[in-house]
Amino acid sequence: MSRGLENPFVMMTLLNKAFLPFALSWLCNTKYMDVHKHVLFLTTDTQTDAMLRHHWPDVTSVVLHGVDSKRNESYSQVGYVKLMVKRTIAILSILEANTAVFLFEVDCLWKRNPLPFLQSQNLVDIVATKVSKEEFVVAGGFLYLFPTNSTKQLWGALTKRLLVLFDKIRFLSPETSVSEGDNDQQYLSILIGKNYVGIRYKLLFDEEFPDGSWYNLTLAERSAMNPYIINNNWLVGNYEKIERAQRWRHWFIRKDFTCDEQNIALNFQNLNSVDSIL
Image (cartoon, rainbow, N blue to C red; front, side, top):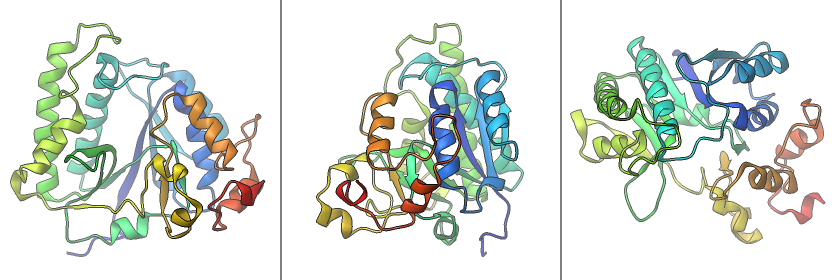
């Protein structure tokens, strides 16, 4: 069955106050890519939701009930895991409505719109990237989920496992550490790795969807690549991520939160060196 741009889909990402600047920059980055009408921001607090609606009134956002997180939640802590449980439940509801879900993150640069490419992968149920080259760990923040029966069954199993975990940690403080083996990313990787319900998946090439190590490559190595998305990760701290994005002209908002049209225009050029934009 052909599944493409004509079929319903939602682009979903989780957002709190700490990540709001990244969301606003990403919205400017993708301003002319005709994707905003598909975006759904799941916000964790009313202040973030209000700011988003103020600056981008045509973009859809909803506040998650039962959470109020303005902090930069840390991986493998109770607060983070609870947010992932909420997100997983929301995704299952959308899949059960026969709507595809593109789960993405906003701390990245979109060089090209990846949607036509992702939606052309119509022989699989899930399109994903790996976290590590050494082991099979699927990145929980970048997934294209086709609403097939296999995807729905797998996501239902993932949701059940996370709800069991939620019951164990529900009364713990948000800062309490959780085993690194207990989160949505690890559970999902196990299910996919075991070929649960015959799930069909495709892992994307690093050359097209590189992680933050792209910034440390040589000019020759970067010039040989034509990525869709460059992830601004493998760097600790939001301030550090913003500083790197600004240095590379990969930051698309000004201090007043309006779009930096010059940087948006530069992004459509094939600029692979800091020196070429200074």
